Length: 212
Length: 79
Image (cartoon, one colour):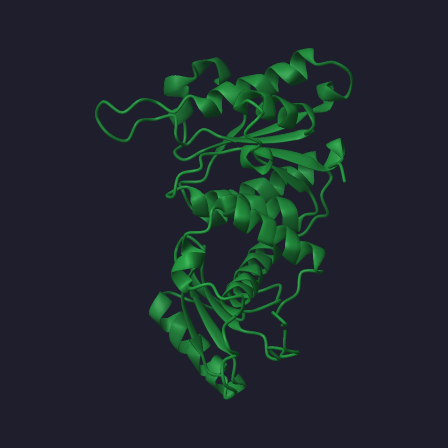
Protein backbone atom coordinates (compact mmCIF):
# COMPACT_ATOMS: atom_id res chain seq x y z
CA UNK A 1 0.00 0.00 0.00
CA UNK A 2 1.56 3.33 -1.03
CA UNK A 3 2.38 5.81 1.73
CA UNK A 4 0.42 9.06 1.24
CA UNK A 5 2.57 12.10 0.45
CA UNK A 6 0.69 14.22 3.01
CA UNK A 7 1.60 11.85 5.90
CA UNK A 8 5.10 10.88 4.83
CA UNK A 9 8.16 12.06 6.81
CA UNK A 10 11.62 11.52 5.35
CA UNK A 11 14.26 11.00 8.07
CA UNK A 12 17.76 12.07 7.10
CA UNK A 13 19.68 11.10 10.20
CA UNK A 14 22.93 9.30 11.10
CA UNK A 15 22.78 5.52 11.47
CA UNK A 16 25.69 5.00 13.85
CA UNK A 17 25.28 3.28 17.19
CA UNK A 18 25.74 6.41 19.31
CA UNK A 19 22.97 8.19 17.46
CA UNK A 20 20.61 5.19 17.34
CA UNK A 21 18.64 6.13 20.50
CA UNK A 22 17.97 9.62 19.07
CA UNK A 23 16.96 8.21 15.68
CA UNK A 24 14.62 5.72 17.33
CA UNK A 25 12.97 8.33 19.55
CA UNK A 26 12.44 10.67 16.58
CA UNK A 27 10.99 7.84 14.49
CA UNK A 28 8.73 6.86 17.37
CA UNK A 29 7.38 10.40 17.75
CA UNK A 30 6.56 10.52 14.02
CA UNK A 31 4.72 7.18 14.17
CA UNK A 32 2.98 7.95 17.47
CA UNK A 33 1.50 11.10 15.93
CA UNK A 34 0.10 9.09 13.02
CA UNK A 35 2.69 9.76 10.30
CA UNK A 36 4.82 7.41 8.21
CA UNK A 37 8.59 7.23 8.69
CA UNK A 38 10.61 7.04 5.49
CA UNK A 39 14.31 6.22 5.77
CA UNK A 40 16.85 5.00 3.23
CA UNK A 41 17.20 1.39 4.53
CA UNK A 42 13.45 0.77 4.10
CA UNK A 43 13.89 0.06 0.39
CA UNK A 44 17.45 -1.22 0.42
CA UNK A 45 17.03 -3.07 -2.84
CA UNK A 46 20.49 -3.99 -4.07
CA UNK A 47 19.49 -3.24 -7.62
CA UNK A 48 18.67 0.41 -6.89
CA UNK A 49 21.42 2.96 -6.37
CA UNK A 50 21.37 4.53 -2.91
CA UNK A 51 20.96 8.02 -4.30
CA UNK A 52 18.01 6.94 -6.46
CA UNK A 53 16.33 5.49 -3.39
CA UNK A 54 16.87 8.73 -1.49
CA UNK A 55 15.52 10.81 -4.37
CA UNK A 56 12.37 8.71 -4.39
CA UNK A 57 11.93 9.11 -0.62
CA UNK A 58 12.42 12.88 -0.86
CA UNK A 59 10.00 13.18 -3.78
CA UNK A 60 7.31 11.14 -2.04
CA UNK A 61 7.52 12.85 1.39
CA UNK A 62 5.85 16.15 2.24
CA UNK A 63 7.94 16.43 5.40
CA UNK A 64 11.65 16.06 6.03
CA UNK A 65 13.65 15.85 9.27
CA UNK A 66 17.36 16.47 8.76
CA UNK A 67 19.82 16.01 11.62
CA UNK A 68 23.20 17.65 11.05
CA UNK A 69 24.77 16.28 14.24
CA UNK A 70 27.43 14.31 12.40
CA UNK A 71 28.78 17.13 10.25
CA UNK A 72 31.64 17.64 12.69
CA UNK A 73 34.53 15.19 12.90
CA UNK A 74 35.04 13.73 16.36
CA UNK A 75 38.69 12.75 15.94
CA UNK A 76 41.77 14.15 14.24
CA UNK A 77 41.95 13.32 10.51
CA UNK A 78 38.38 12.04 10.48
CA UNK A 79 36.35 13.14 7.46
CA UNK A 80 33.18 15.15 7.81
CA UNK A 81 29.99 13.20 7.19
CA UNK A 82 28.57 14.95 4.14
CA UNK A 83 25.51 12.81 3.40
CA UNK A 84 23.17 14.65 5.75
CA UNK A 85 23.79 18.19 4.41
CA UNK A 86 23.77 16.81 0.86
CA UNK A 87 20.34 15.24 1.37
CA UNK A 88 19.10 18.40 3.07
CA UNK A 89 20.15 20.25 -0.08
CA UNK A 90 18.23 17.78 -2.23
CA UNK A 91 15.10 18.22 -0.10
CA UNK A 92 15.39 22.01 -0.14
CA UNK A 93 15.96 22.00 -3.90
CA UNK A 94 12.98 19.71 -4.39
CA UNK A 95 10.79 22.18 -2.52
CA UNK A 96 12.15 25.16 -4.42
CA UNK A 97 12.18 23.74 -7.93
CA UNK A 98 10.00 20.62 -7.89
CA UNK A 99 6.74 22.46 -8.49
CA UNK A 100 3.19 21.37 -7.77
CA UNK A 101 2.70 19.68 -4.38
CA UNK A 102 6.46 19.59 -3.75
CA UNK A 103 6.33 23.35 -3.12
CA UNK A 104 4.37 22.52 0.06
CA UNK A 105 7.20 20.50 1.54
CA UNK A 106 8.21 21.37 5.09
CA UNK A 107 11.63 20.80 6.65
CA UNK A 108 12.82 20.47 10.26
CA UNK A 109 16.57 20.75 10.86
CA UNK A 110 18.13 19.40 14.03
CA UNK A 111 21.68 19.53 15.34
CA UNK A 112 23.42 18.37 18.48
CA UNK A 113 24.99 21.63 19.67
CA UNK A 114 23.58 25.06 19.01
CA UNK A 115 25.13 26.87 16.04
CA UNK A 116 27.52 24.02 15.17
CA UNK A 117 25.94 23.89 11.71
CA UNK A 118 27.03 27.44 10.96
CA UNK A 119 30.69 26.43 10.98
CA UNK A 120 30.22 23.96 8.13
CA UNK A 121 27.06 25.13 6.40
CA UNK A 122 26.85 28.90 6.66
CA UNK A 123 24.45 29.13 3.70
CA UNK A 124 21.58 28.20 6.01
CA UNK A 125 22.43 30.75 8.71
CA UNK A 126 19.21 32.32 9.95
CA UNK A 127 17.08 29.23 9.38
CA UNK A 128 15.13 27.96 12.37
CA UNK A 129 17.36 25.13 13.57
CA UNK A 130 16.88 23.22 16.82
CA UNK A 131 19.52 21.58 18.98
CA UNK A 132 18.81 18.49 21.07
CA UNK A 133 22.15 18.06 22.84
CA UNK A 134 21.94 14.30 22.10
CA UNK A 135 19.06 14.13 24.60
CA UNK A 136 16.20 12.02 23.30
CA UNK A 137 13.63 13.93 25.38
CA UNK A 138 14.64 17.18 23.66
CA UNK A 139 14.62 15.49 20.25
CA UNK A 140 11.07 14.24 20.83
CA UNK A 141 10.00 17.70 22.01
CA UNK A 142 11.27 19.40 18.82
CA UNK A 143 9.76 16.80 16.51
CA UNK A 144 6.42 16.81 18.32
CA UNK A 145 6.17 20.61 18.24
CA UNK A 146 7.03 20.72 14.55
CA UNK A 147 4.54 18.02 13.57
CA UNK A 148 1.77 19.74 15.52
CA UNK A 149 2.48 23.22 14.16
CA UNK A 150 3.58 22.41 10.60
CA UNK A 151 2.00 19.08 9.74
CA UNK A 152 -1.39 19.36 11.43
CA UNK A 153 -0.73 16.50 13.86
CA UNK A 154 -3.15 16.07 16.75
CA UNK A 155 -1.99 18.20 19.65
CA UNK A 156 -0.81 15.33 21.82
CA UNK A 157 1.56 16.63 24.50
CA UNK A 158 5.25 15.78 24.64
CA UNK A 159 4.69 14.14 28.03
CA UNK A 160 2.14 11.81 26.46
CA UNK A 161 4.49 10.90 23.60
CA UNK A 162 7.29 10.13 26.06
CA UNK A 163 4.89 7.97 28.07
CA UNK A 164 3.90 6.11 24.90
CA UNK A 165 7.58 5.63 24.09
CA UNK A 166 8.26 3.96 27.45
CA UNK A 167 5.16 1.80 26.94
CA UNK A 168 6.33 0.77 23.48
CA UNK A 169 9.77 -0.13 24.84
CA UNK A 170 8.24 -2.47 27.42
CA UNK A 171 5.90 -4.02 24.84
CA UNK A 172 8.75 -4.53 22.37
CA UNK A 173 11.03 -6.00 25.02
CA UNK A 174 8.42 -8.56 26.10
CA UNK A 175 7.54 -9.45 22.53
CA UNK A 176 11.12 -10.07 21.51
CA UNK A 177 12.00 -12.07 24.63
CA UNK A 178 8.86 -14.17 24.15
CA UNK A 179 9.91 -14.77 20.55
CA UNK A 180 13.30 -16.08 21.63
CA UNK A 181 15.55 -13.02 21.56
CA UNK A 182 18.11 -12.30 24.26
CA UNK A 183 18.59 -8.89 25.89
CA UNK A 184 21.80 -8.57 23.86
CA UNK A 185 19.91 -9.36 20.64
CA UNK A 186 17.49 -6.53 21.40
CA UNK A 187 20.34 -4.10 22.05
CA UNK A 188 21.85 -4.92 18.66
CA UNK A 189 18.70 -4.60 16.55
CA UNK A 190 19.17 -2.34 13.54
CA UNK A 191 17.09 0.87 13.71
CA UNK A 192 14.96 -0.20 10.74
CA UNK A 193 13.91 -3.33 12.64
CA UNK A 194 12.93 -1.30 15.69
CA UNK A 195 11.03 1.13 13.48
CA UNK A 196 9.09 -1.77 11.97
CA UNK A 197 8.27 -2.91 15.52
CA UNK A 198 7.00 0.62 16.26
CA UNK A 199 4.73 0.35 13.22
CA UNK A 200 3.49 -3.03 14.49
CA UNK A 201 2.76 -1.51 17.91
CA UNK A 202 0.89 1.42 16.36
CA UNK A 203 -1.09 -0.88 14.04
CA UNK A 204 -2.04 -3.01 17.06
CA UNK A 205 -3.66 0.05 18.67
CA UNK A 206 -0.75 1.15 20.88
CA UNK A 207 -1.19 -1.65 23.47
CA UNK A 208 0.12 -0.94 26.97
CA UNK A 209 0.99 -4.56 27.64
CA UNK A 210 2.18 -7.46 25.55
CA UNK A 211 -0.09 -10.45 25.06
CA UNK A 212 1.06 -13.75 23.59
CA UNK B 1 1.32 -19.65 20.79
CA UNK B 2 -0.19 -19.72 24.27
CA UNK B 3 -3.03 -17.47 25.35
CA UNK B 4 -0.94 -16.08 28.16
CA UNK B 5 -1.46 -12.40 28.88
CA UNK B 6 0.66 -10.16 31.04
CA UNK B 7 -2.24 -8.87 33.04
CA UNK B 8 -0.72 -5.95 34.91
CA UNK B 9 0.91 -2.93 33.35
CA UNK B 10 4.61 -2.60 34.08
CA UNK B 11 6.31 0.29 35.83
CA UNK B 12 8.96 2.29 34.01
CA UNK B 13 11.79 4.40 35.46
CA UNK B 14 12.65 6.97 32.81
CA UNK B 15 14.70 10.17 32.61
CA UNK B 16 12.77 13.42 32.67
CA UNK B 17 13.57 17.10 32.52
CA UNK B 18 13.54 17.45 36.30
CA UNK B 19 15.23 14.17 37.21
CA UNK B 20 13.82 10.65 36.97
CA UNK B 21 10.18 9.69 36.66
CA UNK B 22 8.13 6.63 37.50
CA UNK B 23 5.56 5.87 34.81
CA UNK B 24 2.95 3.17 34.59
CA UNK B 25 2.71 1.68 31.12
CA UNK B 26 -0.03 3.42 29.18
CA UNK B 27 -0.25 6.38 31.56
CA UNK B 28 -0.22 9.86 30.09
CA UNK B 29 1.71 11.33 33.00
CA UNK B 30 4.40 10.27 35.42
CA UNK B 31 3.11 9.01 38.76
CA UNK B 32 6.11 10.51 40.59
CA UNK B 33 9.27 12.47 39.86
CA UNK B 34 12.54 12.06 41.79
CA UNK B 35 15.83 13.89 41.95
CA UNK B 36 17.88 10.73 41.47
CA UNK B 37 17.50 7.51 39.52
CA UNK B 38 18.02 5.53 42.72
CA UNK B 39 15.05 7.21 44.40
CA UNK B 40 12.88 6.58 41.34
CA UNK B 41 13.92 2.90 41.24
CA UNK B 42 13.07 2.52 44.93
CA UNK B 43 9.61 4.03 44.42
CA UNK B 44 8.92 2.00 41.28
CA UNK B 45 10.15 -1.22 42.88
CA UNK B 46 7.70 -0.77 45.73
CA UNK B 47 4.79 -0.36 43.31
CA UNK B 48 5.90 -3.25 41.10
CA UNK B 49 6.19 -5.55 44.11
CA UNK B 50 2.78 -4.54 45.43
CA UNK B 51 1.15 -5.04 42.03
CA UNK B 52 3.15 -8.12 41.10
CA UNK B 53 4.32 -6.72 37.79
CA UNK B 54 7.41 -5.81 35.78
CA UNK B 55 9.88 -3.04 36.47
CA UNK B 56 11.69 -1.55 33.49
CA UNK B 57 14.66 0.69 34.15
CA UNK B 58 15.57 2.90 31.21
CA UNK B 59 18.93 4.48 30.61
CA UNK B 60 19.50 8.16 29.97
CA UNK B 61 19.11 7.39 26.25
CA UNK B 62 15.57 6.05 26.76
CA UNK B 63 16.39 2.41 26.03
CA UNK B 64 15.62 -0.32 28.58
CA UNK B 65 18.82 -1.29 30.36
CA UNK B 66 17.38 -3.54 33.07
CA UNK B 67 14.18 -5.43 33.72
CA UNK B 68 13.03 -7.00 36.96
CA UNK B 69 9.95 -9.13 37.33
CA UNK B 70 7.87 -9.24 40.49
CA UNK B 71 5.21 -11.44 39.01
CA UNK B 72 4.33 -14.56 40.94
CA UNK B 73 3.55 -16.59 37.86
CA UNK B 74 6.40 -18.37 36.06
CA UNK B 75 7.96 -16.83 32.96
CA UNK B 76 6.61 -18.25 29.72
CA UNK B 77 8.87 -20.71 27.91
CA UNK B 78 11.09 -18.97 25.40
CA UNK B 79 10.43 -19.89 21.78
